[in-house]
Image (cartoon, rainbow, N blue to C red):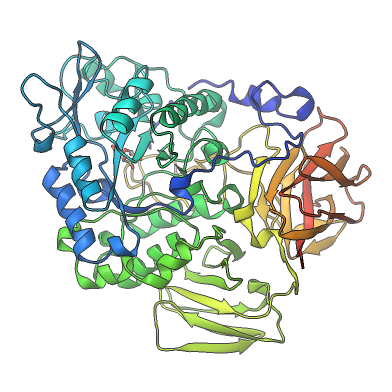
Length: 639
Ligand code: GLA
């Protein structure tokens, strides 16, 4: 566990209703535009290789180039893996005289300075570009990097005086981003955050190594004492600098705040991807934890910005070549929730059995499907999950996931797929290509311990001429989710910490994001239910919220059955539901109360490019109310 302080975040959040919104805060007032970040470089989740899970800080140019060569030689590059990312360990020091970062040329010999000149990673980047690949680099948002706190025996820690060892971006954003993107021509930067979390004055290594103490702005597992607004602001500065030095937009900003500082909510507005949880280790329980931290956040990801459950550990530990069932599970799960696919293995020695996993074209195609809909959990339990992802061509990918170490028999139903139960559904298995099967109503799926069966399903959708909004998270941006006080999410699997063991009193909830917008669930995880009427589809969210839906003229009508959800904590406040098309009010309800029956609410949305769904409390100061956009659906335009 990585501990820490501070926190006006809660106060800022308290002011987030429209009437009280502070300047710059997201507002529930419709803007008639898509406000989340969208970038050319990440219209699909990034694919590539990263040095960290394979080598930690013990990287060398040979290892990086060897893996790049292997990516090409094995055909993986041709399947879409193109980023080669150098993680922690590349730096030597920050030069005292002008603050320029120096490369550790002992391990990156091509960076050696010509006489009297500067060290440079440009030759390596040029070489990678020459191979048809893209290049990624690593830094930290604080003064110091994670290895300076957690890899104290590494041979590749920065050297020199206190100032020279401050290799992170803090106070150097413009200078370093210009170096990475303009001078060295990198395409991708991962920005870690240990510098803002782990360098408090009371840490032994801070004194022993004479680092300058930094009052932590991230206190792990403690949102009230973390300053989410400050952390977000620091990352916004980085995003702005990247826009300055890479104006073509072909750059990736990977935010690495491990699910802390409310990043699971704001990451989509600032970066291309954001880590939703702690570091993955090559253990089954760690994989579950990483998966859960991202899998419950489908509505917060869409083309241009993706939840990041961390890099792949396929090939190592519980996912090695002797555990191919587990390795395929891990890869299938990352694919269906649109996670970045970053291989973390020494590819120079990869056996064919692993190459076949990373290289499975059909599974990659699920991850890279252009609609960008993250898979939605259609069946949930501690043992078994069914995750369904709507593909651009209307078919569905479905993962049936056995989390336990015993064999299980699952029943997959047409209802899980939102397909008609009296029409045939064809299932094609993406790992076992021995053929497809057809079922009507439901079918049994046998699962070995830890197995994930991954299929593409083709059948008749329940909605003949349209979609439920919850089938299309890729066109939804939760601009404001109504959460005022970030809360820890209790639903994420918590195994024994691989770092601390059981030396503590246990693993507590860690990551903020509880109470956010949910597909086919109320915001706190119960079934959508208004006045006792349960809805199998819809979106659950809090009042004081606004969602933007990228309809782009493809739909003519929006309809839903709306009301206060039976799960609400606040049973007295009243709320109105409003629908806007390109910023214009199209329809709204009267104020609705707890226990009132669901109200039909429909609007002709014509050719609107953006539809906005607002839930407005009649009293802006009242505590949020859980609400349902039950059966929320878009009817397709016929013209
Ligand atoms: C943190 C990150 C990891 C890795 C290391 C490098 O722990 O979460 O992904 O980058 O730092 O030190």
